[in-house]
Length: 197
Image 1 (cartoon, rainbow, N blue to C red):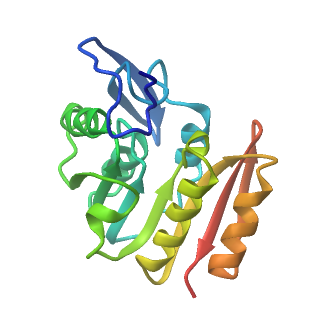
Image 2: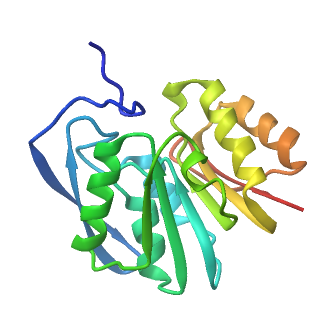
């Protein structure tokens, strides 16, 4: 059987390891395991997105495709006024994200297992953040983008990180939102924001 980190049935794992990330003057620690994306370190795309986060003063936000939780946990830690929801299709990733919230003394987080925004379909968000799983294919990523638009509050935003050269994502954001802004370019990645206007 072939296992993928973006699967609802990831490769089973009993072995975990601990990795570290410094962001916003805070040392974060994350438990990872086989069967999740980038188990050996916080991937560079997520690190770059974290570096350029546009953080609202208050409100409900979503880490879409949260993995073991670095983006959502950093958001929750740097702004305790936020209500941070974290969604992933991979139950192992969500279990690790929950444990990582405890490891980092973060309480303002809520965890959901499911596909795209299905588990939070009754909620609306001030901001949604994602390092979308391009290896899952454009069909999945485009669904994430369109559902994000549907679940943003007016004047809310979607902030994502993608590799340079993936122009189909920028075009799709323009098609869905009518706008897309590149807020950062670093190490072969671009951080994009689209607003719901």
